[in-house]
Image: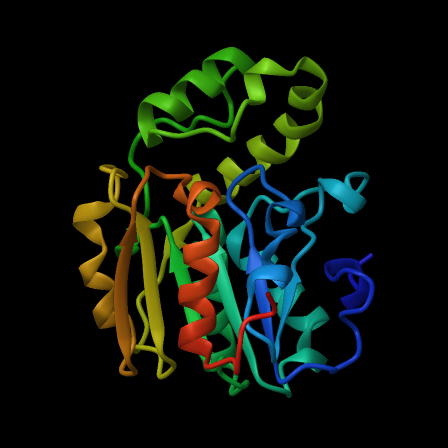
Length: 254
């Protein structure tokens, strides 16, 4: 199932708000991590968490394991939603996907977002992003341990709940394959405004954030929040407020 309604929640099909904010989760994550954002965002913005195959309501569908195949599928499915103002947010792997979606739209003459928000992800460099042995082929326990050692993070509490682990691991493994086989191909800078966010204790990426400035000819903003790689959970209110401010919503829903 590759229709727009597969990617979106009920109620997001009709263009009822001035700006749609499409949200992409980190590896192993799902649309539920954005469940509070609509209550926190400024009015005039419709939060549209994207439902990825292999988890949540699409758990019976095979997850994507190649970035450019994912990008082609989602842009084709959501093409009708890019005709009205939209923005995109992604965290970690979600940032890679968000960035490549916008690059694909630019390369094919499609519309650009009013803002692109990238979080918890270093700027990509030409070629394959990792020269280390892949994690996605490892046994479960070694796989999770290597994620912690190599990237400094793994989805919250996955080891503490065996049932949850069985549900999440297939999507997490596919997502890591998606990322670890990603080969970045250089292209002209984007034209849309770009904001980059990160936790100020996320040592894996902090030194590689300013280079995002060269990926757009538009306005650029870099902002850090207290916390590590998953700062977006602890600093949810402030992050959503920062996004809403940059999108220029009229006032808070609260």
